Length: 69
Image (cartoon, rainbow, N blue to C red; front, side, top):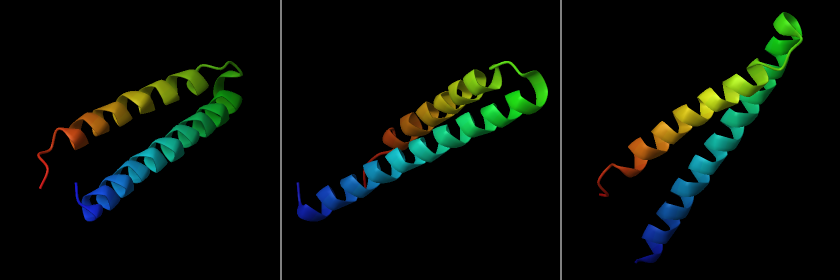
């Protein structure tokens, strides 16, 4: 594997990890806010991150099923 491919793969994985971190933090924050406004029960703080995980896993499967160029 060439040095350029290693750099490209590292940046690709770093981008996916950053996307996961920000998306999950945003889902937890939004769930916390919604629970405080609507329910006073931790429903959205559980449901929103689970939905986000499903969406992110779909994104990873789609990303890695692409043929490499």
